[in-house]
Image 1 (tube, rainbow over the protein chains, first blue to last red):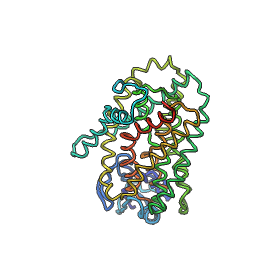
Image 2 (cartoon, each protein chain N blue to C red):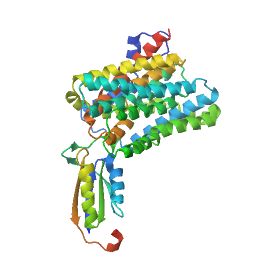
Image 3 (cartoon, rainbow over the protein chains, first blue to last red):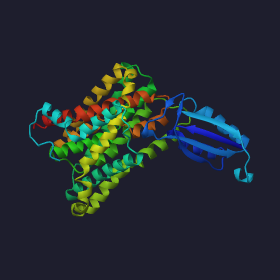
Image 4 (tube, one colour):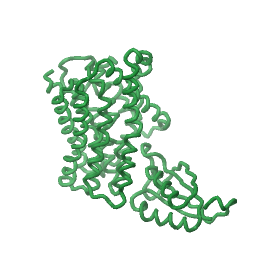
Length: 95
Length: 331
C-alpha cells in the first residue's frame, strides 16, 4: 500500500479531496498545517490554513493521483505531494 | 451613537474629520498600527468569525424590522438597478486595466471581478455612518448587498477565454457566494426581522442594535491588521494599480449615487448604493477568482481591493460619497 500525503493551500483542498475519491481512494485524513515553501509563508486568514491530506491507496491509485496533481494543480496552486510505501492492517479496506 | 452630530449642511471637510475621528475608524487605524509595530495582538479565528456573524445578522434583523413596518414600493426596482450596476462595473474596469494598465487578461479580469462585487464591511461602516448622522435610509438595503455580490464576479469571469474543464468553477462559484455566510445571514436576518416585526425585535434590540457600533470597532481593529499586511505588496503593485484603486471607487460611487437618485431612493439609500458600487470585494471574490482564474496574481487583486480601496473607502470615501449625495439631493 502507498500513503500519499498532499499539502495544499486551503482554497483547493475540497477539490483535491473530491478528486482523490473519484480516482479510487476509499478515505482520507485531513489536518490543518502551517509552514513555508517556495511560494512563501501562507498567512492570510481569509483563505484559511494550509491543509494536509493523507490517504492510503493502492500504488496504481497513487500514480493516478500524482498524474492528476501534475496536470491540474502544480502550475498555479501551492501544493506539494509525496508518497511512502506503508504496511497496513486490514488491507482489504483500502480497495 | 452620538459621536457625530446630525447637521443638515456639513461641509465635506467637516464630514471627513468627523469620520476619521469616529471610534470605528480610529480602531481601524489602531489595527494598522498593530501591524506596523509588529505587535503580538492577534484575534483568534473564532472571535473573528463570531464578530462577523453578529454584524451580518444584526444588520439583517434591523433591516427586516424596518421593512415590516412599511412596505417599500421601490424595492424591486432598486434591487434590479443594483444587480445591473454590479454586473456592469467590470465592463469598464476590464478595458481600463487591460489596455491602459497593460495587465494580462487574467489579472485584468480578476481585478474587475473584485470591483464588480461588493465589500460587506464597507457597507456596515456606511450604515454605522448613516446612523451616526441620524440620516434615514431604506430597511431593505441589506438585500442590495446580497444581489450585488455575485453578478460582477460572474461577468468578469466571462471576459476571459476559459480553459477546458472549467465548468466546475461555476458550480463552486455559485455555491461559495449563495450559501456563503454573508449572503445567508443578511437575507436570513431580513426574513427573521420581517416576520418578527418591530415589536418582536424590541426584545432583542438591546443585544443586536445598541452594541452594534462597538462590535464594529472590534471588527475593524482586526480588519486594520488584515489590510495593512497587504501594504508590503504596494511597492510591487505599481503606480497604475494604486491610481486605479483610488479613482475607480470614486467613479463607481458617483454612478451608484446617481442611479440611486434615478430610482427615487432616499439620500441615505443612494449614498449606500454609491458605497456598494465603490467598494471592492475581498472575501467572496478572492476565493472564487483564485479557483476560477488561477493564473491571475493574488498579489495584484488583493493589494488593490484590500490594501488600497478598502482603507480608502473607509476613511475618505464614505464622507465623500455622503457629501456627493447631499449635493445631488440639494441638501
